[in-house]
Image (tube, rainbow, N blue to C red; front, top):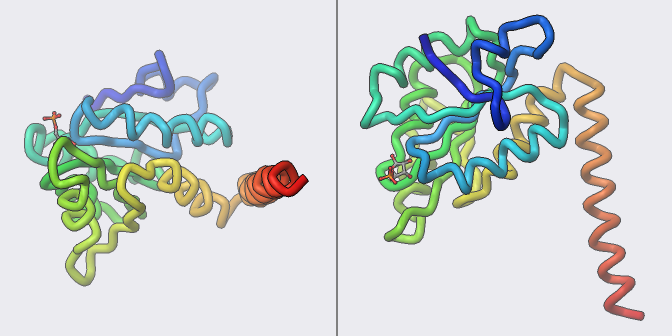
Length: 181
Ligand code: RP5
């Protein structure tokens, strides 16, 4: 059975109880070394109160786990997958090849090549297998995009996104005010 971590301490098994909502977004990454980048996506989902799971699924080191994950995601109720990987970053594309769910790819910057290797690996998908690719290390935008996708069928989520835009704009305007006065 696949095991996932929800937030800090809960396991995937626990998410199946009535008390805890089932995850709608799945955050997966190729290695625990991706966690400092990918945990920012988790922070955003927590902020928006969107149930999610988070785990390591490696296209190269755990290929059978990746296949199982992609094949079971729809039946487990997942609506959007965020997949982060660095280097020869095949994880998002391989998952997108095996599921009809939207996949958002996060190119993770590794120790060499400045993350351009990851970006090219994820963004250059062949026609027919889409991966929505965000900027290098920008898992924040991956989470915000996942939330917008969910917001398509959920007015409560949509209004939270609208609030986020207004708040963000106000923060910049406050800085302008401070700078100019
Ligand atoms: C990729 O290889 C992972 O996504 C990670 O970004 C990179 C390096 O992995 P580690 O060697 O740090 O485990 O599969």
